[in-house]
Image (cartoon, rainbow, N blue to C red):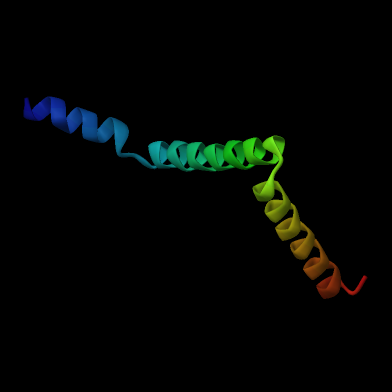
Length: 64
């Protein structure tokens, strides 16, 4: 039984697994934001305003 636990730990607790989990979390976030934007409504307006504010902030910093 202990050997099975050691095997499972070695298999699923590696850096590769951590990278896959991080990628899945980012993908889930993108899907939620895309669904909110596609639905329209207040959340869509807030997300749009955040991206507009970021864009204008970058424009000010770059001098254009």
